[in-house]
Image (cartoon, rainbow, N blue to C red; front, side, top):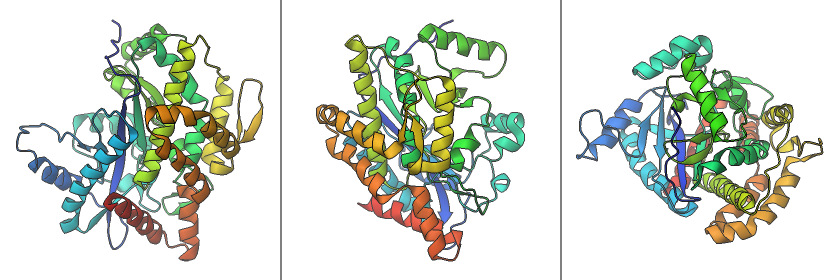
Length: 383
């Protein structure tokens, strides 16, 4: 049985924003997601039974919600939808004295003590993955880009893998874990890959190779269906998209806009290159794996491997040249302003750097790290 790839308009977008719920006074995680979800559902009287809110979704932990968009034609449209949904959610947070927080992890919450949402699929995840599954106090931003031909899917995954360290370095925002400084820009990247179907994707020559892998995993009981394949970059057959899931959580809509624009431009340029008869260059898996580790460890200071020959360069230097190359693509897609935000992200520094500065300024008080990030999110949403 194959995996049908849904019809999707080229270079359309969908964005997903995972957010923790934190106490406004202490920065502690608050397990009140069900109350937020219930209040959000009440705004839609047309929903019945177990119908989910169209844009506010349940997550593994009761301290987490996820905001999603419709299929959008532009980055601006997608970010606008996220803002509108977040403004509504913030109204429901207000009486609970709760703020929205998004970085790669919570810096001091004890991971194994966070209550899990009472759903069978989450319970099965914990039963299977045990200690590692109970560590998943992590938050990310995911970007879907539509493809109008299934034959593009695997080459686009390969192409995005070449930019894995760029996305990881830009978004890295989890230097603390369980109250300790880890020395890594992104603890989340290395934590999430411990789940059996997470981490770097396998690479396939064509769609049939991906279908065969999924069939094998289902046959051997690794997964029940393709949605349980949680690779960092993956094809999503039911949506007709490729999903970029590399990024740590991002505090602001401006950062999300930059990441979404970079993703959209890269996918569009890869597809154009394929249609022009070019082959997507790939690197050996050991280069890709090393790039992931370097970006998780060193963030914006990572020296990355650029190609199969092993040439290396500072990730920000390479990214600056790529932004110049992608500028005409961004103009055609209508996201030139958003793509320029990536340069500002490099200039301002990533989340892990900001967290370290805040912690140092407050004598290591990690509560201030959370409150600072939550304040940035609140300001960004309010525009």
